[in-house]
Length: 352
Ligand code: PEP
Ligand code: MN
Image 1 (cartoon, rainbow, N blue to C red):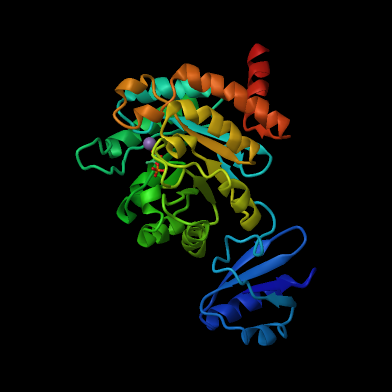
Image 2: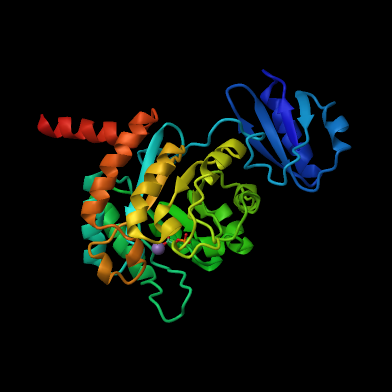
């Protein structure tokens, strides 16, 4: 249920309504746009409330949202969500690139990769310290030692870090090191974890469950938003289909669908989306052409010896080549690469 405020209504009306909602056992989430201010009412609402609320001072109209997800919907917030991470803005006209190894394996591996991806134009360093693993016998990550390595690489390169958090108990620990918390495909419906990252003071990237519909994905996003964390981005990472050539089927259509249904930024991960390094570039370019707000790409100094996801990891050279193509596609779509103007400005400043 959405309460649309009358244009120019006093702030006091808004405060009174929020107070009334709390007393009635609902939570009000405010979205202030240029055109209008709306309150998303969350709780067990019922249609009869509409008539009553429309009599409240400052209310223009009350709209019932038919979709099961509310706060993530465009109806609640027509304008795109923009998320600030350091100097970057995710969502909007710029495209951000997150790159790095699947798993943090060693200081040298991460530092080398961080330098290489930064030089090629990446904005955010990725790397898993807590690794979800289909088999208990494969590498499960370095844990906090891995987080420390990421922090070191971040300090050296100035790139913010995104890394996965797997359990509610680890949210606090991972938040101390990470700039963005990643919720992986296997945890998309770990509702206790979603609640917990919803309480965190950090941006969260929610990956699509490998067998989740778009509606289920947006309902999971709703858990995080309902806890008050509005710094949320979504990531399409491929879904399970009958096809076995690829590890997953990269659902490019999810990108424009999410943009139609939701105001949340959408990142594309063609590494997990395909599972094969030679498919990463074409699907990355297709994702940018489809309107993605960013890419997440796995890069490794030596993919053949990677402890995880080597088959889908790009070498430094391949990543560099991909970035050149991404820039070209982005420009052709009227988009800009995040950080590029600032990068140039820094060069000029250094030249002085
Ligand atoms: C990852 O990003 O390395 C990862 C495990 O992703 P996903 O949850 O999409 O499999
Ligand atoms: Mn991986």
